Length: 221
Image 1 (spheres, rainbow, N blue to C red):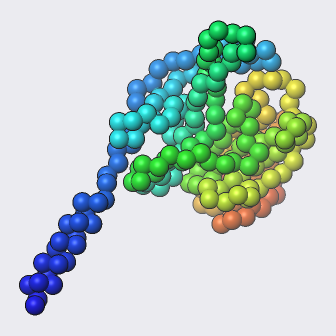
Image 2 (image 1 turned 120 degrees about the horizontal axis):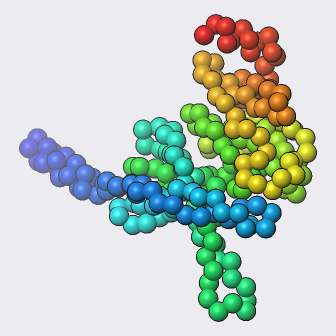
Image 3 (image 1 turned 45 degrees about the vertical axis):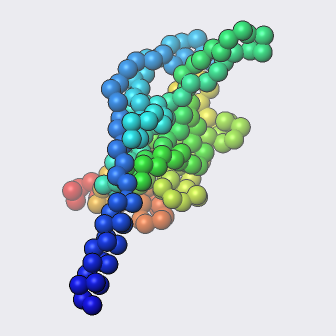
């Protein structure tokens, strides 16, 4: 009886092992493309892109470095081509556009878009730490700017503070300098018109730090 039980367990284990597929997720070599920016989209900006493939099949194009979240998850910025042709044009006119962020699972091979609250694909630039993204977001009408900290897996931002009116210049990443992170404890600083504000991140919440607290934390490191 015992040999039969052992054989059954061995067969079950081999079947389970056989049905577990190992996926190969790769980012290809970088190549340069032109991204047209400015109010009239007539200013060329060179961007490096890489192909994101799963098991040898192209899934997306990406730009910029990836951020490792865990040993199996990473995030990376998406690039895609948009058809800019008019109805009377005879053929498609493809233009490169910068997209949002993708969450990539190395184990399952799943590639899914991240929904970052008030993130603007053209004007926002995210700074990552652990599973947190800090960036300057825009209101739906693009008239108001916000300091935002979002966490992967949560719909509502941990932090959303008004920064005032959005900048007039219609150029990429123009809302504010990229936020800067510090660890132990986790905190992030936003700079708006030369004024820096630091927020402490605790679990699923964010609190503003006074200048004295910020200086004490800096002095203790």
